[in-house]
Amino acid sequence: MSRMAATRDGYGQALLDLASNPKVVVLEADLGKSTKSLHFRKQHPERTVSCGIGEQNMLLVGAGLASSGYIPFASTFAIFTERAFEQMRNGVARPNLAVHLCGSHGGTHTGTDGSSAQSIEDLAIFRTLPNVVVMHPCDDVSTRELTMQLPELGKPSYMRTARNKTPVMYDGKESEIKIGKGMVLREGNDAVIIACGVMVSESIKAANSLEEKGISVTVVDMHTLKPLDTDLIKSLVEKCGVVVTAEDHNVIGGLGGAVAEYLSSNCPVPLEMVGVKDRFGESGQSDEMLDLLEISSPFIEDAVNRAINRK
Amino acid sequence: MSMSNEEVEEFARKCRVEIVKMVYRAQAGHPGGSLSEIDLISALYATRMRVRPSEPKWEDRDRFILSKGHASPGMYAVLAEMGFITHTDLESYRVLGGVCQGHVDMKWCPGVDFSAGSLGMGLSFGMGCAVAAKLENSDRRVFVMIGDGEIQEGSIWEAAMAARHHELGNLKVILDRNRIQNDDFCEVQMRMFDIPAKWKAFGWTVKEIDGHNMNEISEGLDFLEQTNDGPAILIAHTIKGAGISYMENNPSFHGAAPNDEQYHQAMVELGEVEV
Image (cartoon, rainbow over all chains, first blue to last red; front, side, top):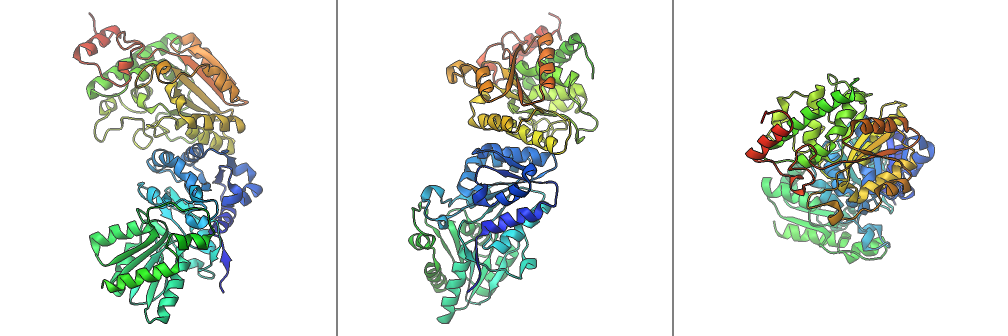
């Protein structure tokens, strides 16, 4: 049994690790206990700016800090980052100011808080913004590592983290994680599953189950949705022939959309997209949500079979 | 820079000429709010701002954030008078590839510290700049100009609350109270009642002046410079379109250009052309 951890804890740890850089500042909108920026706040209150429950202000305070040479890390729930979308668009992305926004508790996996808290469109909307790097890591190790790389990025970013614990994939493999580079976690020849976030472990489960039935599947953790690692996708399409995407996000505009955009123009092959089918969730446990919305591992398995049948 | 009130008035007159020329050439833009703000920005730059036109990115410069970024011709005119850009650059207003984009943009124009265009954003951005100055123990100041219609944006009040919470004495706001917004008079669009009381209730120090009277503007800027224990706001009562008779108090000239005849009349009224 692998170690279980929440990606948000990786984010909180990374902020602490980054504190040795005096230009790193943390912005909060009253959810530091949840997003895990509180650890930084406790140790470095002088470099933590409370913006109260005011996400629009927070994004632009970040922009002002970035324009003055600081490296601001702002976090709130994924759903509330959307409230400041235009601030991110006009105040951060357009002038290309390196504000790093983290939306925790993303996706339906966040569970019992219900549909108002289950952001299923954040990855799509931030992906449409020029200059913005969009990430959704799958475990605490990769979240920490990707966050640690942000000060060198020199452009704004959005990272979705998750509230609940998921299996850790990267213990001991930290050095292999790079922004913009997808990671092959499991190799097979019959299909490739490209997943992000909590769906990476679901995809591994699906692949293990398929293996027992004689189907070998590659699983990729596409922690960076933008820029998309198209070189990796191209090589895996050549090897496997069909693609399945898996995300805890609306099927419109997220990882599946990004992969579809690439495939349709460059190497059209059968693609099945596992994601939330353009509907809202409801209150329930994480595993119940994945089943209700038909994105848990059995549904990924079905999608792989459908894709292979289209070969 | 040291200038007498009379010299600042002449500085502002020259800027008014450029504002009208820019909008006339482009046959688009926002003359009304540029003319209402221009005496204030002229005085601020000509007598207070610690900036280096030859070194626009000097780290310890005072920041000026034009949050009502549609009133860009006013700021461009001032930047040209100050030497950040040339008067020829003003011809690029709203022209493809020009440094003078429709709304002021830090990526395009030397001397511009904020990419504006969406109302309600500059105060928050300015707050970030003010926090940065405090973190660095720098005595640079952050001046933010906002419009009166603009304070209908809710995010203005997020920033107002946060700036006082953080006791940002280096954050200094000028409110251009010209009483007109895009569609009509503010009073028609959204009554705002007692604006000074609202800012006081958010913990700000407030002073009101006539935004076209150089003596009062000078006193108002003294007030901003001397209020350092928390954020301060100077509410400047202005006239939209000030200086051009047919534009004054006329909502039509929020975002419209003069025609040939109106342009000629404006140049006459500004003393550029003899009757």
